[in-house]
Image (cartoon, rainbow, N blue to C red; front, side, top):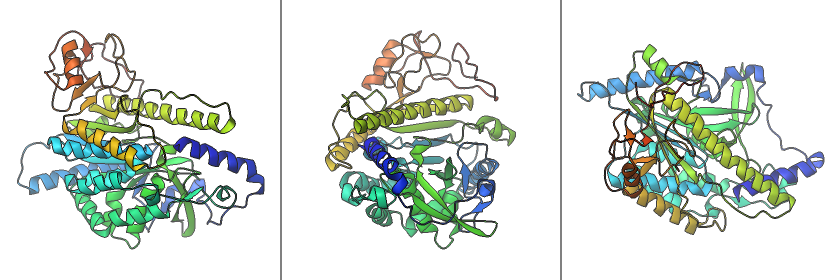
Length: 466
């Protein structure tokens, strides 16, 4: 449904582009001036998502120092506890799975406080609730179990393809966001930012054709007039499917001149992100004297197996199906990129996704019955100790034998495997059933991490941790 909406809008617009008149807007920022842009007078609240960003590196180091200061101010001594990162993907209605998983994780009593939370598209809408912790679980559950299409969009009719910038308006989504993304929530986000925690949201600047990472905590801490509206704009932009939903125009300045940027769904750049892969976290941390254990949890709000469907031999179904396949494979590619960077940087990788056993069909956009079923599924697996996959789908460690599905290669969150060990078949069974313990034996490789440098990665053939 989502992919077909994109395809329909794109094809209709292409067919009539010669006769279309564009809606008014301010000029886009010239590419040579993009590095000097300010938003609300702020120049350091966002970063490039696809290149090295010294500002993001500086922000990361500053966040560690703030975290350390808060740790000591609380009367605690010794090293900081492990840093937990959470990355939440796009997926539209499927975000109900991630929301349910988080609430269930709370019920299990093992959900950590996250040092870093990132979100794209529906993941961007979940991210503020996840960042602020379990006290926001009731609101998160309400968003993903009580809303329907009328709370998200208003159809403009197909003539909008000729006269407007999308087939639907997101005015209802803006009203929904205003009920939850409030000044009080922004104050709480700012308070957590002061403790060294980071909330990052991804959009795509359609003019520049590049991903943008917004530092929501730093924006909230600025207390600038208009910051609440800007944060709401960013969240809506991150979920603005091009053609289906209108882009969000963000007013900016460069060298005293006013421009507008056109921001759309972060999923047009990536389905999920943690940090730019060019940023070598472990090397940079060591250079700054920062050495600590890090764990990454990725929630992919989608099934990872191919989604079979007979395709009608007609233009729109063919294009829609192709775009759906493109989104699917892009999402898997994103997981591999994140896994490679995590392993290089010594970060423990953990992946959750909608299981293959969930086969309920989405009858209409934002169908409450579908979303409630997905939320319940996520809650149930989270509450019973979710078996996080240790590898991307289809990945096979050297010498590990046959490729297993992510679920089969998973280790439950409350079970650990000694570094450098291998999992026995019994351990795999335990991961799948939630019973038994993970014992070391010859068989499936245990999770490993640990390459560095900018050269192509070189795996330790035994999968040992350094």
